[in-house]
Image 1 (cartoon, rainbow, N blue to C red):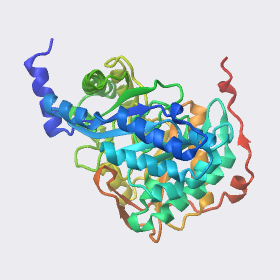
Image 2 (image 1 turned 90 degrees about the vertical axis):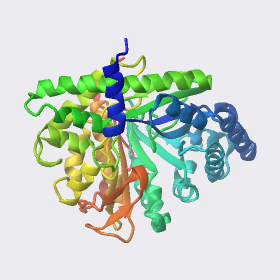
Image 3 (image 1 turned 90 degrees about the horizontal axis):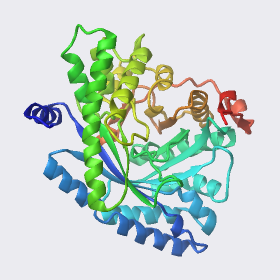
Length: 451
């Protein structure tokens, strides 16, 4: 039974501790929009998205007003566009412009799915789409792109790794007059989930229903505030505290997803219970770690502290929803987290330490600004390293790095909004060019053979 204390506690979390629903994301299958004529396919895509998601934004706004729960973003994810490009041929950028037009019509913040899944190799449409990514992102405002280059089952496609290093660099160069934002809307995955509601990595997997609503919650500020009340707790007591807090946060996501599903007439998919930070003071994963006892995020003990936090969030959240999915845990994007930004600025947090942290958290090297003269081969090496962590540990990892064209270490890029700002971080410039140029494939690890 809901009591007065529970209601007041939720109100306090929303008003004082930055609790919100980070996104409601409608996944839409475009399989039935495939056509050998690219123009007909684009028209089918536009019509279907506008029909299915016509009321998505309004429904979210209505739920906000009725329940007093902030819903920050309303988004759409679609079937990987490389599949449709493989059927139609032609210039994939036409699909990008169609998705942008649909996003503008329905009023969503982002639309994801300009994607390709190439962990085992390139099918028809994959290379064409990948090569078009920089132009597609430079030509649109709301479009997000992702490429899955590896998995625990398949290994790592090193030819794709080589190409993606080039595409990240090109995406930044084509948008250098807009703080290189093209690279900020491009994610390279290993073990990409098919039901992730968070951008820029969201796409609607081929095993998903025709249409579904997924919810992403957020509550770093709530967790930090709760931990702060108990400065003398032991680590296992802190873990229990975080579990209970994650349960409460996730219940709110379950409520919003259930209501949105009923009103939109589509199935409720999953709640992604990730702690997604923002640049706002008090809404930082790094500040949770510092509240637990680190002098500065990035110091010795950071990886262990993050492992405990991530595990407690998962354990608490999984009991609060009928279906937990997506990434679910703790995000560590540098530019989107006030504490991470501070730690990077003062040198306490390095890319090498962030890479170690990705072995125990939800995703990977996220929203990290690197020098603009970083070579494509070095970027490919960063992608390969992160993919190896994901492949060997049977977890999702990703790379979203932003080469700051014309800037060097100590300079900053300013994205604004939830994307925040980021200091240019040092990168090891010793070249992996020969390794990257070999191409081929890193075989799947032995423990992938589980059948």
